Amino acid sequence: MKLIFLIFLIFCVLFSFDLRVDVKPDTVYLGSLVEIKVSVENNKNNELPVFYDLEENIEVFTVVNKSLTPISISYFLQFWRVGEIIIPSIPVDIKQNNHVISQIETNKITLNILSNISSTSNEMRSIKPIKELNLISPFKIALLLLFFFAGIVGAGYLWKTKTRQSKSKYSTGSFKISALKESVKEIEDLPLPEIINSESTEKYYLKLSEICRLFFKEVFYIKATEMTSGEVAEHFTLIGIEPELVNSWNDVCQIADMAKYASHIPPIDQFTEDKKDYIKLITSFYKIQSQLGANNKYRKFA
Image (cartoon, rainbow, N blue to C red):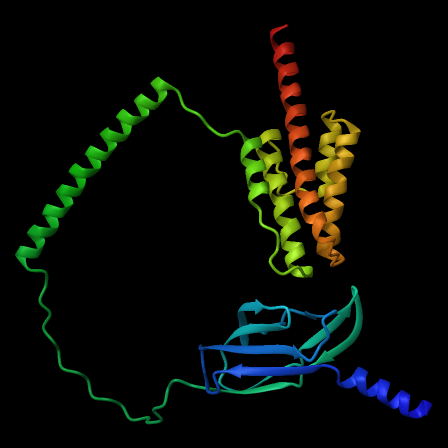
């Protein structure tokens, strides 16, 4: 009885997943796009397939694009060599509760790449006779000159109109949305991922981090988009930002790093809460920068 149960358990583990590979089109020519779709079938609701990038060989083929769904991935390839091309096995991990419970892989994919050149004749073709070419007629030349002068006149008119509008704008005053309001609006308008998985979670938190770094770049005049999180925190410490606020920056960076490097997927409510935390963070930094600017202005006139 135990032996039967063991055989049944092994059968369920080994054959619970179906890995399907589809190649479109069937006939592949040099330089044309080919779609290789890898899909996992018969998996349970709480089992999540994890796909990896296809390692390309620039001399043989390049990966132009890829399309990901919850149960499949499509690689779009472009081949640069004629003949039989063998693509190595593509691995797929099966995760359950953020733990890898199984790893499966496709067989090697063999494709026969054809050439668009169908002629096999080595005979030299006869030289084509000289063909007389008619240059632009005088009428077309006159028409082009007319368009040229009309373009100059139109450009002058637009320049004068723009100059008048600029003078009117500066005389009545202008309004520009502050960096804080613009960044807050971008965070509020950032939609939640439609399909929550490790890839969409990573993109979501990287976008929050990007908005925050662009805000720092404009307000504090630092290259925040080119600096590491630790370098940004060190800069804030050097200019006298409160340690508590610097720690808040480190906390949000840690959340983004977990999503990027550890494939951490927080609860659905946490996505919205983290947006609020980012808004509170940049608002606090904006207030600190305003105070620093006011203090520097006071010292200048003292």
